[in-house]
Length: 220
Length: 220
DNA sequence: CCGCATCCGGGGCGATACTG
DNA sequence: CAGTATCGCCCCGGATGCGG
Image: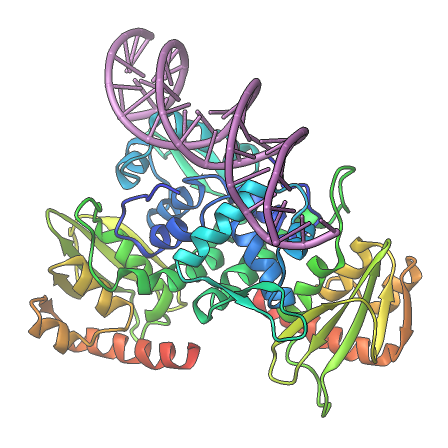
């Protein structure tokens, strides 16, 4: 991206991450952690392959990401955020918070829907996790794909593909309902009445989102 | 901007403010409040006039800004943020915070420098203002332009052009030094030793930035 | 001077095809 | 799977023009 050539913190930030797709690549890496090329491509429907490569190269040159080989026996090339790249989570949180009102009417006809995009709210509004001695795992299913969002006690979180392993509670249904619950705008009971299917420790979900809605009120 | 067509809060936000120059226009309007076309143009060196007009139109269509006629006897057309547009301040704060490290080496040869860009730190790190019954006014001078940053007790702030009226304390010198002090990375005394000229109630500046540096430590 | 509108060259972007 | 190559197109940048 051409520099704005302004000695301003906002302009300098946009010089680096103002390019199209750049912040969405960071979104994927923040959610899933180290990712292979194909996984990034799948998480960014609509991106052209040359653009994805170009962004990854410039982001590496800017010190936001690193290419690494995953530990054996995987051995695949993976892209990973540096601490500097991970520091963009505050920017993504702010953008996500601001973008929520634009989602109130549900996905448009042509919109792609992937559950990890709703999972970012888990780190946005649900943290910190309640007093549990192990991380809370929330399963998310929309359409044919499913992920699990893992909330740690310190407020951090990450997302993993599939539903293998222990899942404390899981939600299945439209992205609008799941996103509504995770963003604290819709109570789990209300969402259930509207068609959301909750399995597992439903009371855990109530606790997490109860804290979330008070938070949102305070913030606004 | 072409929509990402992803049902994701971040993508929806970028659909609206992901265009080049868009967030920098918001920066100017957040700093100065309602502004005329020519003032926006001056605060955005490098922007082409057709682009500025195009952005203003699409931002108006998206409900971020409104065109109004300033109160008589001025009567000039001004652009003003709506509440929805003002809500982008959290995004700009996050971007500014992330962009600070990119400014540590001072402005590049070709970089434009305008004091209001350093003033955004006043709202970023200096709030809330200390116990004063009236707003604190800080004068800022870099090169040939000067502004005053007005900090209100509730944490809000705005910037006005010129140095007319009462100024509690003012700083004059390089943008690197002024920005360093306002962002809490440099103490006023240290900056003075490096060439910053402080006039007026210097002790007020000490108080404000002392609070700022503890804040930054907490945040990081 | 202010507030745009119009034109035109260059590059970023999007889609597809292709390859080790 | 992980990219590279190519080719329109449209956005962007810079300039000029023009009514109020």
